[in-house]
Amino acid sequence: MVETRGRTGRKPTDGERKSQARKSRYDRFAKPPTWRGAFNRAAIAAAIFVVVAILLLKLKPAPALLFGVSLALFYTPLTYFTDSFIYKRRQAKLADQGKQQ
Image (cartoon, rainbow, N blue to C red; front, side, top):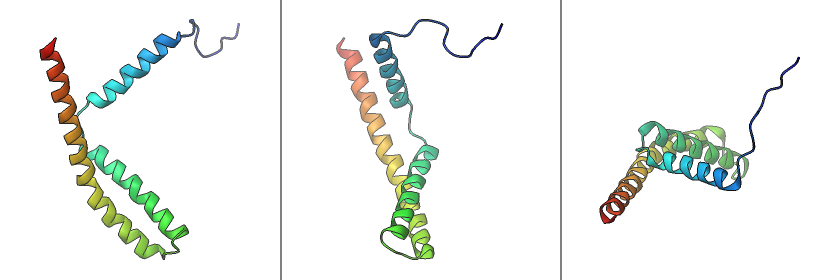
């Protein structure tokens, strides 16, 4: 007998899928921001900028890379403190909702 991989139970209903998506989204936003996450986002944005600068703006690779590195260094604290502000505001809103109930 050959067993196949995959789901062996029933398919989730629309309501179950939506509640799972909502829960995973809530879990993602419930975590405090990290410097590593901020750096990863800044590095991705800088990499996209370098590619666009080289291909569309016809910049030479060396200046584009240098500007990309400086952009990543600028974006890292900017994204961390923005995420931190949003996280604190969300936590305060959740605390207010808990007090009102």
